[in-house]
Length: 493
Image 1: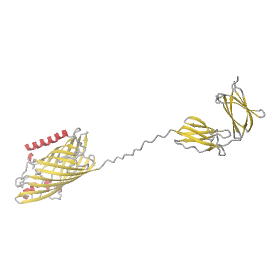
Image 2: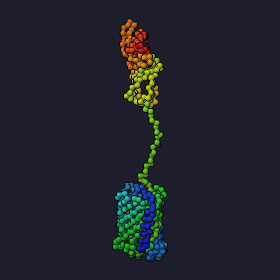
Image 3: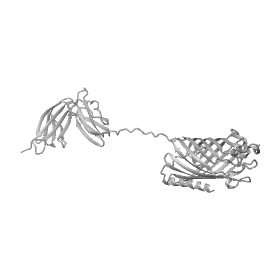
Image 4: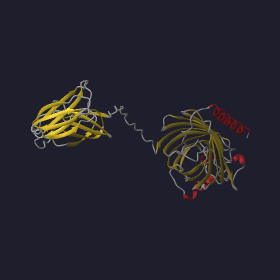
């Protein structure tokens, strides 16, 4: 027992001391020989949603026992596969096989082999952020040879699992407690009493049920590496059970290297502290594990829900802001297609009104017009009033030439009254025909302007204003034409 406590102390000092210094990430979990997450002898209640494949091979050594002369050698291996379809549920299958080379007993050397399948079902949940609880059921189908199946030998393990992860260090503790309803002895040969001691040592069968206890810890010593240590006891119970020291008990230490997101390698060693039972022909069957064993494992994981690739939308270069104003320009024509000068054009847009007059080529222009709908209206003596809509857009092209419709055969008299200093003058306008009859009597506007349509003919225009000398002028009005009369009145002395 002193050796047992010494190994326990070494394992705990190793894991605790390294955990205090490690600063690595524990997001990735290791995988055991059955494909489920865990260490070598213990498992986590919850696993990542993955499909795991596991292959393990190893060698075990057992010293000579009783009538078994010389050492006993075991080559063992397992293939495991596990699927975690839901965050709380995992299912696994493991196929174990071994070859036992027996020592030189009375009948000489002997080589035997056997294989056992096991089915694992595990479920768990989180309790808070750091603690998880769960349960595991295992069906074991031991047989006399490989492959073989003995239904009456089917054995069941039922375990409660617990795990705790440190919130500040890359360190975790996990363990289990459970029972094994062991029926494996029913697969033993019928002539068990005649079995040679070396073969009996290699059976691995039991006449007793067991209480299962285990405790383990792991620590990340590198983002790509992990160390672990474990203690496990299968306490045999029942009428045929040996004393406490005769129950299988073991300690394991090991490490993992995470080669990539999918592949990991594992190396572990196990020491058994069990007091060796009797191998007498009539003694109860007790499983005997190798005193020392070493195992090498290869694990491969497939994510069931791989992260979707992040699609980065191309970044478009910033667009130049579109101008908020534009220039509106166009040409007005008469009914013969000739340009119409001196036509008054009014533009209404964004609640404001602006005015322009066509030039000698009949062109009108409005600069800095707000983008949006606008209305244009033209008025010219002898032509119908014309109104049209325009959708003002940035970089607006010149509008199409627009002909105006003539009305009647009248001409236009346009008067501008000013002082000799070129200031607008409010004046009275009196128009008479050649017989002296008064045709019109009007006032100019504040700008000194006056406009009137008249039938073609000769007229006399009298312009007067208080404080200024009156002015008299004869004009001739022609069809569709504009007669312009600009007068500068001089002040009375």
